[in-house]
Length: 269
Image (cartoon, rainbow, N blue to C red; front, top):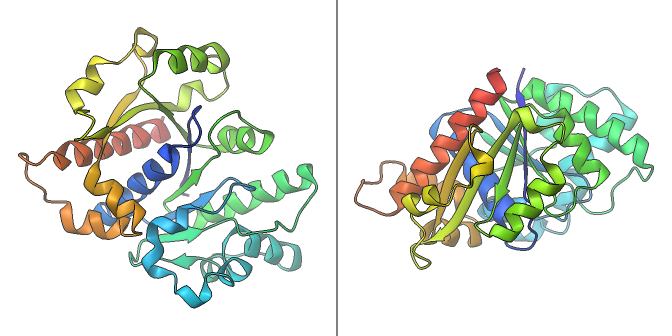
């Protein structure tokens, strides 16, 4: 049975959650050979598939969400019993054989919130049977009911924090006692090298609130962000996984790998 991992940040607008979800998917799928399903919280705007854009033919972009993604799974669920083969048929294939996408699509078929949450839980359970990891890009910012539901159903919860002291205090004042605390991996990230963010700098900014908690650091590299913006995320991992220790991108790969190890540790407990 696979594991559900939810990625979320209290800060909206920077692409922090989506880029880190894609990075972890590539580490697990490209470098470790695990079968990974990549999706989003229902009602989240489409976006995760744009990081693997090379596998989406231009002529299919307007049509793809009618036949693929969670919307297609919901429609099939209403008509027939889901199985592994039907689920894979609804996947949006990437250039990596081990990573499949299930973007939400536009215009969800189930409007009733209670029914939508119940159906989503059932679909996630079926995805767990077909994949080693189901990674969910959850909407950043305030937690809506759907986001709370997938966090509660997750095996590991990755919370992405900024380096801002004010944001840090806001987060812990609101969420320190939430139900996901025991399965949470906190990740601090920043952009390098232009911003001067290195692994050592991130480590120096770990706040006392995180003492004794599972904490990872990912200094997002300029080269990785270029790959993200051009839809070559998985290709970037295949080409650079043997990067030298002298190259600044080594710290990025090292940080992503460490976060994946923490996720596995949480899932096994």
